Each structure stands twice: as structure tokens, then as C-alpha cells.
Image 1 (cartoon, one colour):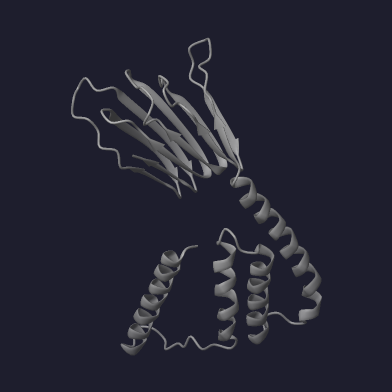
Image 2: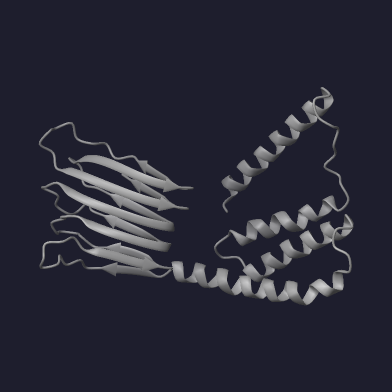
Length: 229
């Protein structure tokens, strides 16, 4: 999580609190206070969350901060009971989560550059990747279409130095992943999407010429994003 994202989150929280206090002052909702028992645990939980989503931070430490903050908050509000019986299970869960998160993040740094070859049967190549970055290299080659399937990773399809002189299809299937597509100038682009908690952003300026090669992008994305430019 970068500083801009953190600033935006804090801004939304401040706005929500301001609206809440205004509604309470007008008698529309019950009066409330953010200074509930254990409110100070926010100074453990929020830094822990920021560290958790920072690429180079220690995930074990961040999970410990979050867990300690949550446990102390629950205890201060008499929602937990005897804290001692939760220590060992909490440590096991934190350790397991830190292993999983670190494995996912470290694997996503792996970059695989692929020199594509078109199958003899005339079909388009399919590039599949999990927990890594896949980068098909079409520099100086004719591009006739491809399919990219990614789970927990990222993909880059840079076609700026490739040749597109016919109608082509690009199929994107991404789950918990992001894909960046860069096209050469002079193409027409049509995008069809199917998304779930995801977005497809087409920034490419299409040619107005009816004779320009047509690029179809079919994007099916869940918990991720696709950018075309």
C-alpha cells in the first residue's frame, strides 16, 4: 500500500466520522464516540495493515501487530475471556499466514519471458502462469493473436514493436492478477469484458480508418485488472 492509497483511506475515514458526528448532532442517529475501550489499539492494527500490503515489509511482524491489536481490543471490551488459551493457536495462524503471503509475493517477482511460436494447426498460443509474471515477446514478429491465463500473478503483452496487419483476438483470463497490454499505433480496438471485483481500462486511441487492423480483446477478470494502451 503506497502513501497515496493510505492518504485516501485516511481521508475517507475522516469524512465518514465527520458525517457520523453531524448526523448525531442533528439527532438522526444515536450519539457515539470513537474513544471506545481499547481505541488505542488502532495504532497497532493500522500500521500492521499498511506493512502487510507493502511489498518489502516483514509479513510476520505485520500479522503480529494486527493480531495483538485485535486481541487487546477484544479483551478491553470483555469479548475474549481468558487470553492465555488463544496464544498458541494465534501464533500458529500467524506463522502459517506469513509463510503463505511471503511465498505468494516472492513468487510474483519471478518473470518469465516467452518467445512465442504459433501451433502448426493454425490456433493461437496459450500462455499460462501462476504466482509469476509472464511476458510473451513479439518484438519484430507478426502478431496473430494469443490467450493469456494468469492466477495470482501478472502479465505484460507488449506489441508496440510487433506487426499487426490482420484482425486478431486477444483472450485474457485473470484471477487475482493484473495484465498490461500495449498495442502499436494504427489499430482499431474492441473490448468485451466479464468482470467480478475487477476492472478493464482501455486507454488506447483507436484509428478511425475502416481499413485499420481490428484487435478484439476478450477479458474475463476476477479480483484484478487489465489495462490497454
